[in-house]
Image (tube, helix red, strand yellow):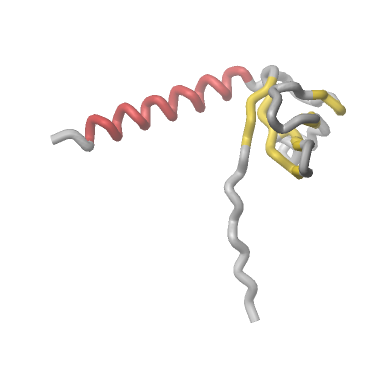
Length: 91
């Protein structure tokens, strides 16, 4: 018997120079860990105490530099992809 796993979409946020992945959510709190927790064994974590607010509390620090460059590269890729798609859809 085989079990098929369905992939969940990865929810990432960018906060103060680092990318975080949502790890767990409760009714009021959202717990996030650094997106490099596996590749660099980073222990960086933040908690969003009120899901409706943009206030975050850092609970553990990172073992690597900020990801500012990675953020801008991803942003450029998304904008470029949108521009290409909008031009290729026009007659």
